[in-house]
Length: 259
Image 1: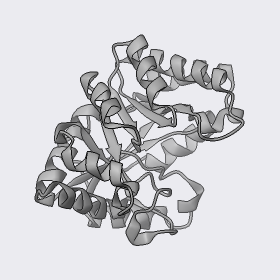
Image 2 (image 1 turned 180 degrees about the vertical axis):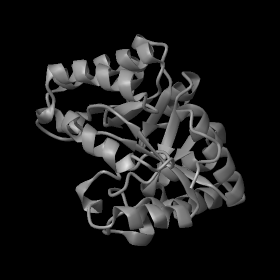
Image 3 (image 1 turned 45 degrees about the vertical axis):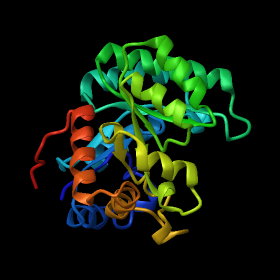
Image 4 (image 1 turned 135 degrees about the horizontal axis):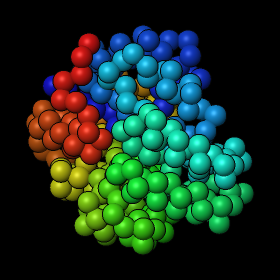
């Protein structure tokens, strides 16, 4: 059984002490590929280095809305250069966050719009962050048009999910779906079309219920797959096979990464 972690921050400082061992644990757990989105321009070189030399690690480059204070308009020009030179698997993490207080909404919109335009120009998928902003994210994706990608850690309504599927967007589900009180999210996981689902850990954040309060890592992805399979009443192998195919198709990942 092979899995793809469609969203993990392996370049985070939390992994500085055991990054190689953490990747080895993920591989041993059946995680065949990991997509690693960026958060700031300053982090791009380190992210590239963290993924270098391992065909299972796939970097994406972008400007995360929660780190607005670190972004500058010239970073968008630099992002264009990185996309052209590095040919990553996606643009991101980008999006809107209306949960964190004090973030300039207008500035978030400018950076989000610009990154979507770059994704469309380069023909790349987008990895979208949408916290308390799903409705506006949907409107923005529709307005820009010509896009594909994933809304990671999806927390919207069933109707919003359907609108995203209608545009060809996938939904990323991870640790939050494993908590028994996450009723709406678990209902969505149980009934949504499997061809629109991606699995993720968001490591080192969003630990699943089995490691509540601890550092998360991609080796936990099988636990998430098992919970979703149980909610759907399907063999976990079916969930793994379809979500892995979804991720490989969206991010243009090779079928069998070399060791």
